[in-house]
Image 1 (cartoon, rainbow, N blue to C red):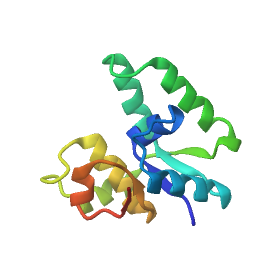
Image 2 (tube, one colour):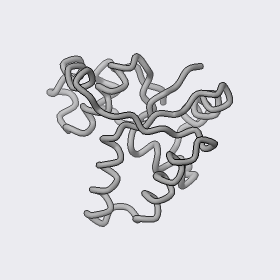
Image 3 (cartoon, one colour):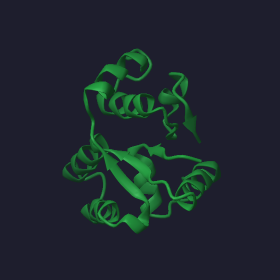
Image 4 (cartoon, one colour):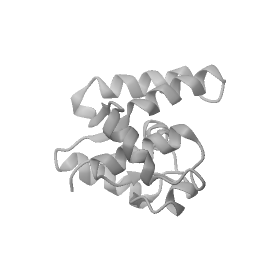
Length: 133
């Protein structure tokens, strides 16, 4: 298995060992890392995490743990930038199905990279984006 993309909530559920993370997603993460590939996280997710802390929806500690993990290769988590190719790939993520801009950007990143997205987001599932859940 090559790399996979993780949606923002997946990163949170990974570092908190949440039971909300599906068995299939957990196994995809395990297989990806075991094969020597990173689990990718969009820079958009990093911005979203900071925003969620500012809104009081998650603890700053969670963000610190995620950021620490991306700075340590052994944890298998890597942030990828959002660039023009990914912005153009947003055309493949229907706005009428996925109206939230960060969600569209994250989904477009997985589309542009040709990787499945680990997500529980039902709207992204309905948009025809390759997902693992």
